[in-house]
Length: 246
Image 1: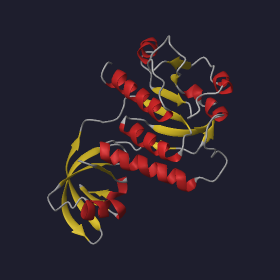
Image 2: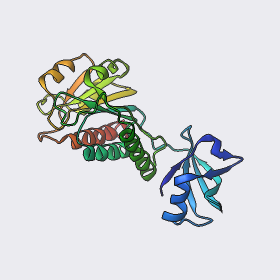
Image 3: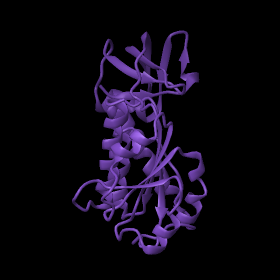
Image 4: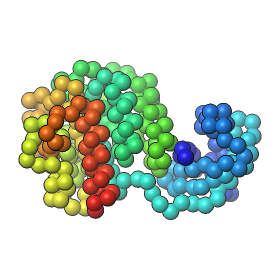
């Protein structure tokens, strides 16, 4: 069952009004009928079981049956700093990272990035990327929609690393430490960053800038992963270690 997100003002006296594109999707694409059940999340990440009671013009009216107690969100806040790839790869990364519980995604222009977007006007691209995160959140039953932030450069994101308990740096030449070992050495972390290189990999200058006390270089295994695979693989491993092994 897909999840639909509403603003708090759309909820009134145990009734919810769905409008706009979501209402059209429910009526004309999914072809739901009166009496069908929908999964709804509000801005406070509360989740509700609801039932369609009426189609009113372009709107869909729902009655709240119950509030769900469980959460589908990760217990840690995860930021993916993704080395900027070509557009189609970025869309795949956003979709799969959302499914794997990422909290926010920052596209980062690095020295070997093939695509250069920092400093240019990218409102439409960011809007599209956030729409992909929104649709993926609906599909996979998230209670929080990850934000895709504006394209940044490595120098700027490094200044933000102090707010993270760990900054993970998957690197193909690292052979000593893996993710499990790093987490075992850092208990009760609440904020984690992942830094992924672009299609051309990290340059020597990138690595020199990332040589910081809270940056942990890790191996993802014996094979070299593409940029669109590395972040997804790291998030999958992190999800297992944090949500199942703790």
